[in-house]
Image 1: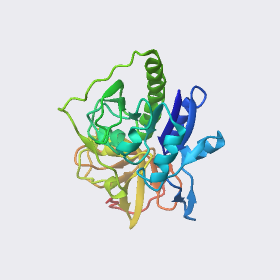
Image 2: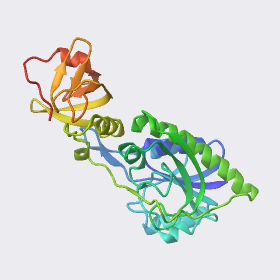
Image 3: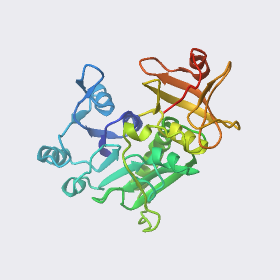
Image 4: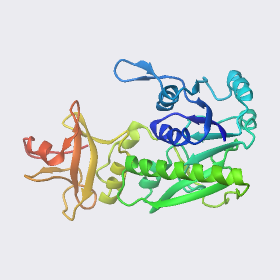
Length: 303
């Protein structure tokens, strides 16, 4: 199948890597180079890096509606477009170019969690299941007809762990349905009107922990914001990031911090959390108990 791929982050690059050995990828469409690190030097996206290494043409339009992108797409004459975490809405005239239109692999069980942060929002909401939905792109956000879905339990996974799992499931789903398309056995069905929710983009300020919340809510937040932007709280005038934590049965005042020999506990609005891995400001990630053993003083508090 002659394919044009659109994507930007590492999770999209992993899907592109699945397609490359099996299909003719004509070009990769990705976001323009963005500043990265302390230097602020413009850096190609993971999709751009992979495509360039594979000798695939890379297109970096300033916006999806750029006339030069439409012109080049028409020259390429793809049979199918596939988008994974591209970061922009593909306009109607571009949607019409591939013979079979565009597919999107979205990491939720649509119509639940349309939008930018479906994995994180599913964890935050306490959903038991999530998955991958392969659907036909239309101009309305994540609202097109569904080609296939696969689901998986969320359990105690972080957003990063869940994204890795969903990427693997999504790659298999895309390959399987390209096969069905070639064989003429592909079926589509409209998304139900009921159950639509939206997964708004997350910002660093959203990851600040409120220790008056119950332990279950805080533990979900810590998992949802791992690996980025990482849950955080104030401590001694600095920012303390928390990578992993687990719920205990102990009760401590909300926001109180209690270092012990083998563990570090933080009080919440219900039972305490055991902080397993933390990132003190300006330092590398470290074991929570080890960091706690270095603290001095009484009445240690978070927030």
